[in-house]
Length: 55
Image (cartoon, rainbow, N blue to C red; front, side, top):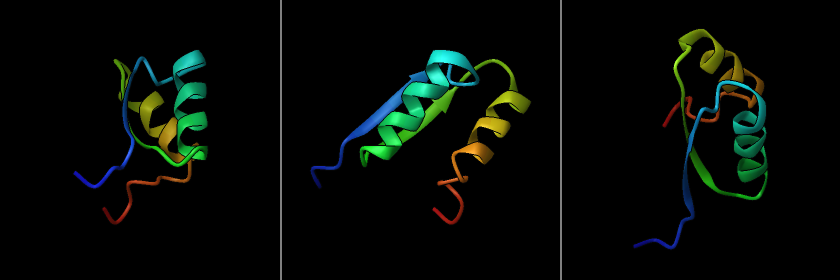
C-alpha cells in the first residue's frame, strides 16, 4: 500500500456530497464521486477542476 488516503463519496452530484468531495480533495485525498445524475456529476467534476483528467 502506498499510504494514500482514498474516499468514495456517494450522492456527490450536489449539496453535502459535493462539499465533502471538495473538502477531501483540498485535504489531499484521492476522491471518487458517484451519483444518479450524470450531468450534475460532470458539473461537479468541472467545478473541482476535473482532477481525474490525465489519470
